[in-house]
Picture 1: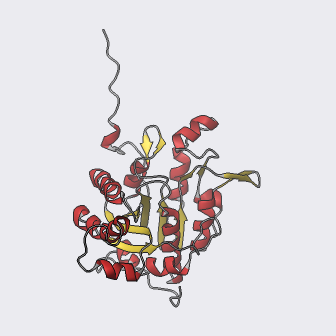
Picture 2: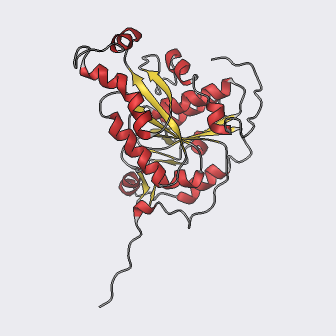
Picture 3: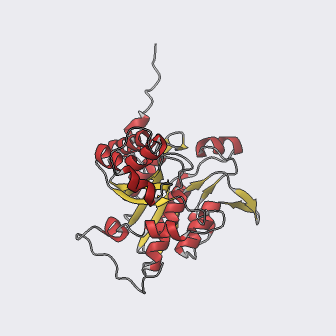
Length: 292
C-alpha cells in the first residue's frame, strides 16, 4: 500500500525554493492583529523619513477589502502610504495584488477565482531596487496570515530580510499577542527592530498618579494594564519599545491624514539608525531641512 507524500511543515517557514529578492534598506511593518493601526504607523514612519530628505518608497504586497473605482480595485491603505511617502509610483505598483473581499488573501483569492500570483508580487518588489533610499513594507494581517495556502506573510518577511517592526495595541491582552508575534518572528530567523505601541490613551496626569504605590484598582485596572504593558513587553520580550503613539483623532487612513500627536510620537524613534544601523552602516545624507 503506497503512502501519500508528506506535506511540508508550514511552521518551518522554508523559503529556500523561492527566488532571491533584492536586498533593500527599509522596514517590514507587521501587527499583532488586524486593526492595530500598522498602516498608520507605516505611513507616519515613511512621512518622517521623507521629511528628513530621504527618498522613500512604500510597498503593500497584497490588500483585501479594496473598493472598485476607475475600472480597477483600489486599496485605501496604498493610497495613504503613497501620500505619506510622496511616491510617484502607481497604486498598482505599490500593491500588486488586490481583492475586494475583506478576508485573508488566500480566502479572497479562492472566492474571487483569481489565484495569488507570487511572481507578480516578487517582480513588483524587485522593481524597487535602485529607486529609493528606504522602502517601508506593510504586511497584511499578522505574520502568520496566509497570503497563499503555502505562503504566508512570515515567508515574505524572510525573503525580504528587512528589520521587522511590530505594531501592538496599548490595552489589556497586548502582552500575549506581542510576545507570540515576537516568538514567531524569531523562530523564523527574522530580525525584530522593536515594537510600536499604538493608541495609548493615558494622559500624563494619569501616568504620574500611577507612579506612586496604590492598591489594585485605585486608578482602574485598565489604566494600570496600559501603563505597565510597555515595560512588560520590553522585559519579557527582550525587545525595544521604539515608540508609544497616543490615540489621535486627527489621524485617519481614509482621509490620508497623520495627526500631529501621532507624527510627533513616531518621530521620536531613531528610524535612520534602525534602517541603516546605529553607527555601523552609513545612512544617505539628508537632502533637505527636517520638518514635521
